[in-house]
Length: 372
Image (tube, rainbow, N blue to C red; front, side, top):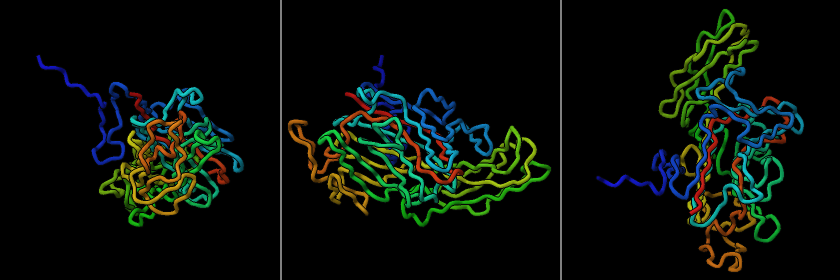
């Protein structure tokens, strides 16, 4: 009898050319992975939920947010001081969560969409990544995350914070790593544009939908929201397939209840925002599966505590790691020279919002790590 096949590195279902191509959908020995697929269903008990003058709820069944498999919406409801966030439950204070450790891989990925006002609002700060705080929109002293900063529109910076080595927070930043406002997610990608659909109705129902502008750069079918006013439950649901990165073949997936007096819609693209540490000194940043930045295997110097205003391939300098902390020092230029040295929790959220129409949608929430 033949010996059974073993999978010591786990089993991944991602394509080999994607940033998360080693993510263990089925973990091997010495690996741990957790995944909330499609928010189906959204279980608030799995997260630490921040909702200050905001709502964090399952999106399906609410006006305009129906999506196959379910989604969760984070909506701030007060113009000043509101915030909304989700962080996976875990005890970061005692190390019971994800931690960057040499020789051990770490993965985190979020599939998110945003409405149009969110992407153009220069007063909103949003974050996606790994944090030492239960509220990622507040003070973070250790973390690795993408941040949409005020006055930047949809552009996001990579932020690396480490307080473990010196007792004071060292913040290292790389500007303009990705762009939430483009369907491709790639910063300065002028070939990627947002598409639009035209919808119409009669007898208080949606009756037609066509592609108005096809757009470009879509990685998957977008979230299409039926935003007509005064509709009644069950609400109308719209859907649109994507071909060659552009909108094609839209549908009225559910005609819905009656009562609609207008028949508008909005197309919101999904983005997969991913961080991957290979356990060998390099951090990889990806969007929609495509690599957009590396730290530790690069060509441009990145000083600990410094800010890079351009580039996407870096090696670290001015690190404070010593042999008393690590008898076997990381290689020169390694991400390990500036990475946080505490347990971190995966999360996302936004704050400092002055536009009460802003909404963040979440479809997937994934993370994994090794401990061998």
